[in-house]
Length: 198
Image 1 (cartoon, helix red, strand yellow):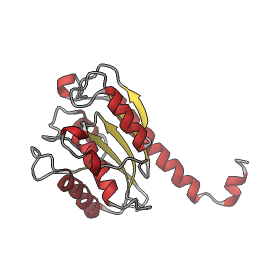
Image 2 (image 1 turned 45 degrees about the horizontal axis):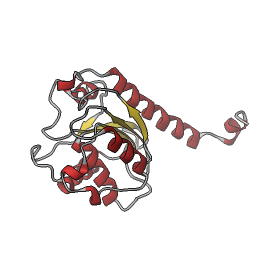
Image 3 (image 1 turned 90 degrees about the horizontal axis):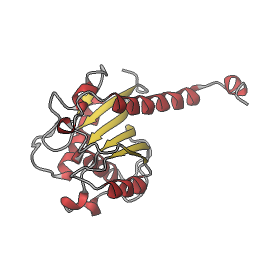
Image 4 (image 1 turned 90 degrees about the vertical axis):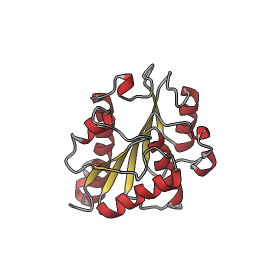
């Protein structure tokens, strides 16, 4: 694949995302999507999970990635970013962060970035998520410079909450893909093409 291709990276949370999960449904819509697989889905070790994200990206480069993370996967993705030392050319170029777990539940808030992520992102929170209160989700969105979406009373945005197929989630991913493709077209545009936009 071209180094400039936009691909989807699925980052599940604790216990993975089974066949009925919206992440699995979403992955089926993207031919070249890749899922991060953990050695132990039941043990929330944020550094080990972050390293698996890094290892997965190393195996599948080159590409530009839209990461789609859920629950503890959101924290692992944020930790992956913080371990990269704010690198300017991360393969992850956008993220959709859905129902992140509360870092304080795992004692890892200090391991996560408290400043904007080096790429565009959207964070989706729920008013009755047992894993993170809505005000905390909004707070983390502010830290990370993420667009915040209040999904209403959507539980943990998982199959138990009625989220198998989730067209709204796919629309969020599509929007991030389109923004990256538009950015690339602008970078490749010839000066004469840009003159028409003035």
